[in-house]
Length: 341
Ligand code: ADE
Ligand code: ZN
Image (cartoon, rainbow, N blue to C red; front, side):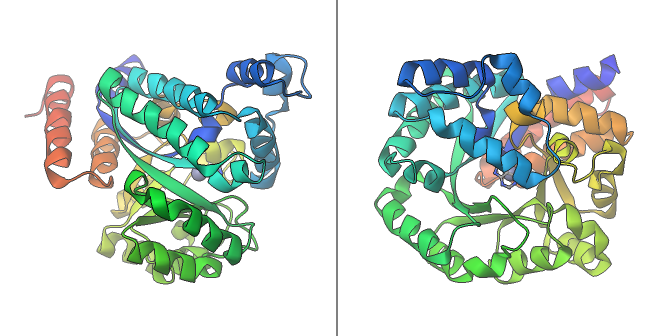
């Protein structure tokens, strides 16, 4: 297993599915609660970690929205993002495309601009400090209404030079992608990249809707695709990227046993699959932990692991020249560690 670990660590990677608010570690939650005078219902960090025992997505979301209640000031969003980027750098991540949930902050009275400027300042500093490039994706909370999403678009419009894409997250069941067709049409007209969570807990029909109604450029999770052969063929033919999150799937009981995760089946069918951490503080692992866990559980080969890292750049929103540079770097590691070249 040491070799697998060495390969995963050495590979340059992009992380394409990461909720910044889901990287809030209990230690920082405590520190921000103290700094901002917010009362937590936990006495210590161990109690917080003990509460992270989820039966499904909603169980997690309830704690996730509660946990982010300590984020109030621009500096809080800055500190959160800085901490994530340090973890990403340690995992040899070279490029990140991160999500944030503005509606979850605005409904607590935190201004959109406060959230955005803290995150952006940290991303800019992270590029200088760690040479990690970035894209920022603003998520719409799907349990809220279409009107709320359209209102968010209005608020965000003056800041569109600082936002690269639109995403769709939160409670999936009962909130199909088609609910946000008009929002995504608008986002497309505004030049935003379009991604959406689909097929995490929801059925293959939701994946089809994300593709056909929302016209997404990339799919978040997409696990349910494996249950529809025509859909798998379609994903392969169209070169759609899936941002899969194995430890998240395990902890949210989507596939409680990692050996049942559809990642290998999809990868071997030719789908452009990537590995990501989703909400690492809540699910017990950053990106390398996810690579290692799924590689061991599904007995992925070294070339398959290399393929996952390659897919992370190919499926990113980087320009082709940057993609090629990172793919060349992967080739060097491949040649050195696997004796190819
Ligand atoms: N928000 C944060 N993490 C999420 C996930 N895994 N699914 C849906 N919404 C989320
Ligand atoms: Zn997610």
